[in-house]
Image (cartoon, rainbow, N blue to C red; front, top):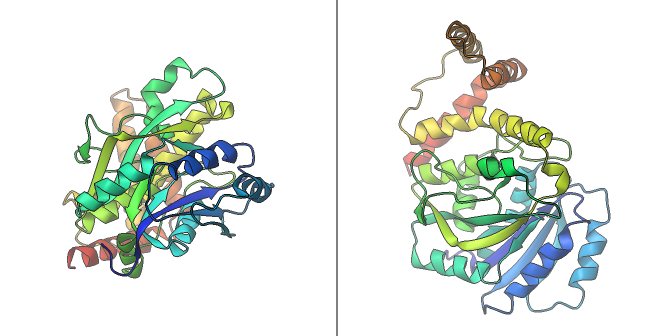
Length: 330
């Protein structure tokens, strides 16, 4: 057990304007208390909401005393910032990040706790999300369900390795001591995650890759299940394409974590690296056009990203690589 943190599970819900969807999420968490005797607490992080979610939470939780709960506020938008706020306010050695639309199965917390206690090599644990909605799930959804933090994350339960290397952030658990160690060594989220108007993602990938570079395993457990409520407005192909583009853009920095983890790290970041990356990408575009390959959305997004980030790109990549090398020396 982590000697600096009490043994138990802190459930963290980060939310933004969740008044219309938070109640069933809370009721499923309340049900957890009937199935375990674990030390548990609930930390709800209000990430700059403008609605009355706080009031809805207080009404729903009124009279509940089986484990402590509290609302804290993170004024800076971005899911990554809200998760860091949850970390700072957590009392126990395992943190469960439950999205505001995740309905945890009744044994989710007890099963996850047992898995962690029985394997000290596990740094992060992910479960299996099931899609639910108030409308019929469209036919195209199954092929893209992982984008929505739904569906199997590996063929079977076990260590997450191979092409994936990460688990989705919904329902994800992490050892608090590992997260705190990463922060103390200089870990900084390059992707802020979702904000009120931005469908970016990637903060969960950065975290998973950093934990693996640190020497811990990422684990997937298919019996660890929850329902992921997806609002009808999110089940359109237009919304999906916007979300997919946001996820793709967020990977332009996290790929350096992945390359380092796979042993493909850059020895030294050359001067004007962003410009050289731009030229290389433009050449790739021309080669693709010669081969009559017109699927160039990612390449074009990368060009725009490099131009936008040109004043920060080189130093950010350098900082990521310095941080990764520091982790491997521990």
